[in-house]
Image (tube, rainbow, N blue to C red):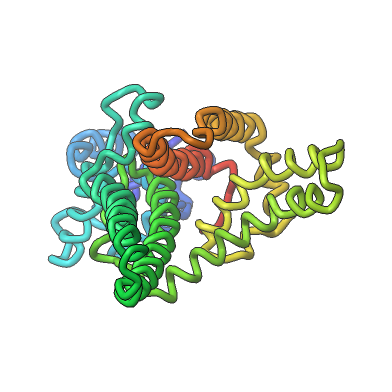
Length: 343
């Protein structure tokens, strides 16, 4: 075999001895290369050894396998030496390197680190807003309801306050659903902490759209079991089958709807093929979610429990919802090559 180095892109290739004196095409840049005679091979090899310290391509210093980006799609769209880069191309190359260096890495075992997902500054701020605003509204409403019963004119003030508070909490709930979906998206992209969203605060229309999609997923997967149980007034084999269907299909359905940003993610063929492609890991994911859900159902406070305990359990549910969103998004990040979704 004769070793040849492409002078356009620096790619090293081999040609059969029988092709000496002929021409071959470089598979990287499609440049026509003349195959040297056998005697010239040593000269070509020595030349390559002296140039191996020079980057073979302007982006060869970056891990293109990790980025999974064809070199032709990188800024500039052509190969060349580092000295030939324009200012814009150098800046683009610097951004690529910065993105690689900035990729977050888990410093703790993943089983511990995933439960620390909401502990970023943005995540803690979101938890504080979602938890404390309803708490403050409840305390203020409770403090006013007592005097209003003794002095009815106060109802004139209490009623508008209650309506404004109800609308505020409703919008806050829509925002939290949207934030959970953002946690899924960013986790699917490889983030390991809750995202900062203050610079991308959505409008009311986007909040309603995202909530509509989430509710649509819930209806599609959990609705049949609920409707059937209400219809027969109990539980039988059909009900449990529908319940298993909801438990097993809901995570992948919600993940698809969030990442495709459309209810088209509920395509039954897409969901079935996706489950089959990652069946065992997906079973582990569903088992994890089922375990968390079962544990929360077991600690549901009975009637008459102290308000403090009820508040602590509410905070725990909100915190774990962010953790579950992260696990779901990270599942896609881990198995996206097997899922092969064009998102």
